[in-house]
Length: 433
Image (cartoon, rainbow, N blue to C red; front, side, top):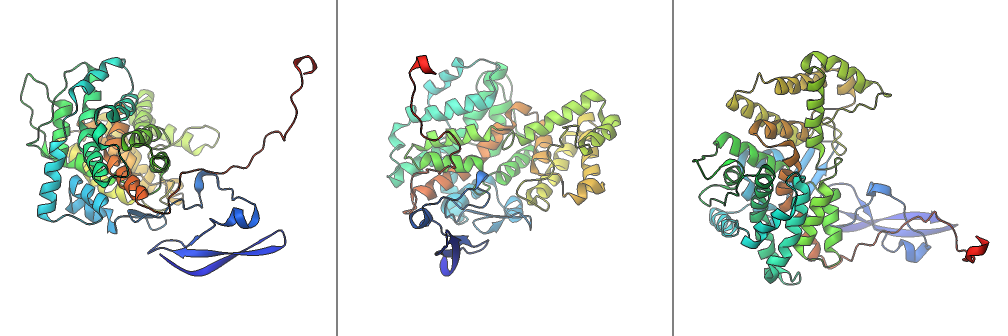
């Protein structure tokens, strides 16, 4: 990070200079930390659209170019050449692992896949029809009550142990949430399986018969996890950082991130996409797709096309191309090319890629569109889509949280405000109000 330029602000007839910081790539940043002290004024930036709240070396996004880098590596290369745990190691440590480092990392994850047996009884406190994300928020938050030997955030060893526990236990907790809602017994982890295959086993195996995960589906899930592992300073990551800035323990911070991710404008996007497809199916399916598209184009209809376009990517979502390939691999493997729901999805994709209305607005299918279709085909219920997202994003949250803890310039998050309420006034006795 370099400081060679300055920016000048004119305010109330005076000029003030502020240093301009330059990162390795990306836009310059005007350092306004002294703004209030110099001018007595705050900045106003709802949604933090133009505000950098931290320094980070983890993930870089260029929305105009459709570029996503993890520690400098393009997501396209990682998704093709690495598995999810390699990607976890990269995000956590900053470099891709050697064979020895990878084997040791995998062994450590496997050593932590089980959860405390008392924790499994907490599920019984939830209704069977509870949303899986409600269960995940509670279960992950409760981890601090069971693993009290790794809560000292000033201790690097504690942070490492907590991180490995979260990476290892999220699949177990997520699969148990699913099993609980459908009334089936929990399936314990199988450490002879890889990360994604083990999750499929805990999701779909039962004690009464042997289950072997389909390698095509396991690889598809692994790719979903890689593509969702981190995404710079998004809403849930910022929530984790803000929670962590107070000194909260890592399990509480990740639970806060899960709660934020639950929102339909964030992690719930792929769930919203499948709900949209189901609504079109109820209206008549492929035969009614023309009417649906017409409603989308009508500004007065309030009908939205979910799973297309992206707030960050002004071009094609770089993750979508990879997920599209995986989508077709899964549909072919399962023989679902002619399933009415998936035929509808492919018809919608074709229109969005060819119709001038969508092309001119760059409303291309995004990663949520394809990942939702893949998970639906694999038998994962729509209500659990955001839970899978949380499982994938946990490593990104951990890496961001750990980076924040180690930043000597980081302070407790305390956003300012533009107050628009009543000025100071006196309280009148009740008889005079």
